[in-house]
Image (cartoon, rainbow, N blue to C red; front, side, top):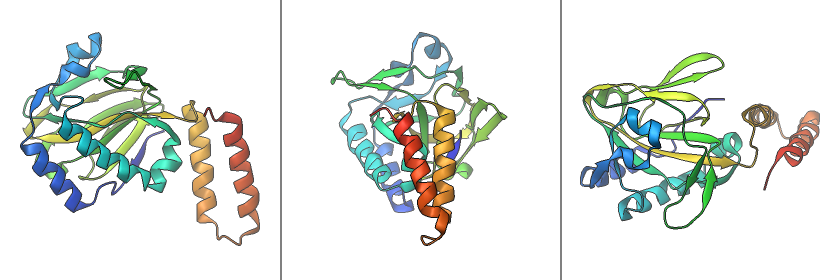
Amino acid sequence: MLIAIPDVLAPEQVASFRASLDSATWVDGRVTAGHQSALAKDNVQIAEGDPLSRRLGGMVLDALDRNSLFASAALPRKVFPPLFNRYTAGQSFGVHVDNAIRVVKGTGVRVRTDLSATLFLADPDEYDGGELSIEGGFGLQQVKLPAGHMVLYPASSLHRVEPVTRGARVASFFWIQSMVRGDADRAVLFDLDQAVQRLPAEHPSAIALTGVYHNLLRRWADV
């Protein structure tokens, strides 16, 4: 299940993020890559644990706490602290699968990566290339969203970032451990939840379908 979530950050928040990131200290992006991924990865990022990364990441998490579409799609149990990366001309990230488990640096907290998230911080007209290409059950999908918008997709998917040929692709990236492990199960719950929300509150089926939703969630959730 691939879901685009619009307006996670407002334009003024994106502008503030970009101003902070322009003066950030960037390091080789391979510091967070596994052995195989490091062979395909060519970008820079802010070091995990950097005070700026923690501050901006906290703001992303606050925004997600207020986002009902994210809650419905991800059913989050744990969210890995958001990181930030940048690709400039010639840089890319070849085909890879994200590590199944990520450890939050300095805490020992482990996050099972059910979902991957990319929050775009540069508008599509700021750079050429840089599409997030995701291989799934419906074939190859390429994602390049406006700044402030985010995409969620299964972390088990083969995916890559296409080479940037002009400008800079700036984004936040992180992973989510869901209360519901299976992508197919989450998709059923998401579709059901969205259908219920489209019904008028007084519709006779609204309460019954809400009950079905919660009974399925009760069956599948790991909390």
